[in-house]
Length: 399
Image (cartoon, rainbow, N blue to C red):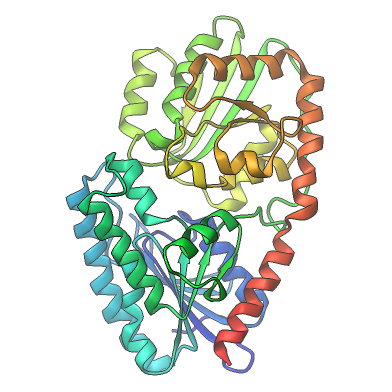
């Protein structure tokens, strides 16, 4: 039960309440950067249907615990799922660490309190990193509609503060969220940023597109199916656009709590020929072919306290491969991209979304100009530099 061959005994275990390698591209990208840097990497994760309990994936040893996501769960059921995984991870990690002596344990949220599964490992010498993919108070407020002053949100904020205090180092995904953590008492010298940048090994350079056809339009969304991500708006947009664009197709690649609702919506609108949905999340290596196929990539997030703070990975993957993007103008996206790089529209505005899609379809030169200008983002934000900084941070924690 070992991962990749390590240099100098550098052993690290990642714990993530998700599947691996599908489910969380960020985890896979960081794990592979560690393997390339000479680390022996293991992952504790969920086990989906048909997945083996253990296997080695691209040099990463994966151990899957007997828990899987329950799509469409309520908050109570989700908490039970979190706690079940927490206690199984605590037992598995402790046993594993006593045999292998990990130098570092890298915990990915959600939930934040999963970091305490590393308590025995920390007490016996391992350093602990907490990787905040999402800020849990904002995530909870967006999902429940609770205000920041409600007792429930205060409790979620408390577990975030305690989790960050327990960790030796905290990583998050944008400078904006790093600043937010600082306002909550997390020292900035204890935090760093690893952005969700496109992996150049997979999303290396723009891909050739088929010639523009005024009667055909290929649209793509990949990622989580949730109301906050506006996937239902895409279905409604296709229902309108098919009256003017005879051969329109939308691919929905992913999974999530909105799946059953989307299937019902597609059926009600009679869009089975226009919209095709994958059976679940795809591995990152399968995505470039779909992105190359698409005329436009879509990022239709609704605006709320959570989505305003994120920079969607799918947006960066579309940009890296030269696919023009129609994206909701949320706060963090607007911090990194300008109007000459992507086609913005007001979040949640279906009519504006339809107009933005149709405008780029009718003006392919404009679409190409956007995708060319968007490559400026990759010139200043490159995964190679982020990975180097990430590895240097972990090396400092190990010594």
